[in-house]
Amino acid sequence: MAIIRGFGLPAWGWRVPTDVQRMRSEMDRLFDHLSSGLSREPGAGVFPLTNVTEDPDNYYVRAELPGVKAEELDISVTGEGMSISGERKIPAEGEDAKYHRRERNAGKFNRMLSLPGHIDTDKVEASCTDGVLTVVLPKASAAKPKQISVKAGS
Amino acid sequence: MTEAEAKALEAKEKQEMAGTAEQTRPGVTFKPAVDIFETETGITLLADMPGVKATDLNIDLREDVLTLSGEVETPEAAGETEILREYRTGRYVRQFSLADTIDQSKIDAEVQDGVLRLVLPKAEKAVPRKIAVKAK
Image (cartoon, rainbow over all chains, first blue to last red; front, top):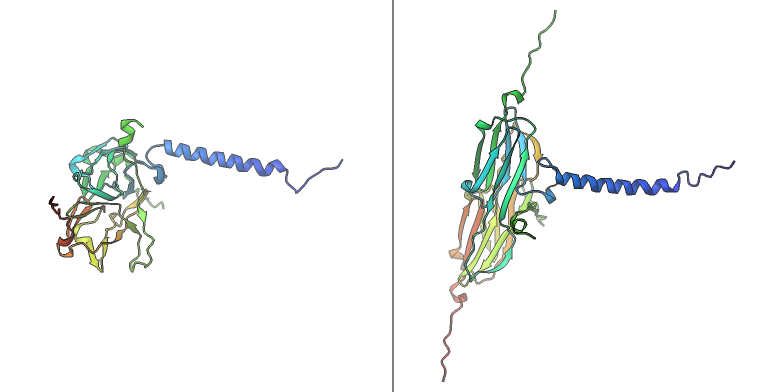
């Protein structure tokens, strides 16, 4: 019985994986957009873009909000996350103003962010200066790393 | 598009500047988004430069080229580790060439909440003057 092997791989083996791979990465991208908080797709992201960092005691959430005053921001926290909402307004400049360029946008925003650990909601502090919002969220004591001392056995 | 969709603000990544000259200091450089409009008396420029304080802003005008540059401090302290980074911080630089009709001695600059408002008044001879036409 002759076994025909062609180029060592069956022809369908070349095409199907590529199509499946492409579909799979499309689906992954779609699901990334639907998931909240820690999505890593800033190109299609929710305003404002945020950076989250931590040290042993706190989480820090920062966002760039030029032209938004502290009083116009609404920040609320739950045990595991927070939301930032408000409106960026661009004041009208008068009827005789003729625009050469218009690159800035105005509008409402509402962003939910989930954090990797629990936070102490009573001690959250937020400040907004020069158009940068900084929120300091102290970790709940259960979530802080605890040093365990190791006793030496004899 | 419904009312609600039309008013929601979308996130845009900051535009990085690919300059011809390299900056002497390392770090990324962004072009701030600007609105520029003109009235009878002058040109006003509004630039979004979050994180820039008035003291870190440099406005330079020479040979009819206006250069805006603002330094931004890295906001993260040394002991912080990154969990999520959706935007980078870096200095803002943008250049414009101006018509020579600007009265350079009367330029006014003001920064508030990370927005620079730069007013460039037109030189006297450039302000349009209405000429009354008499009918004979």
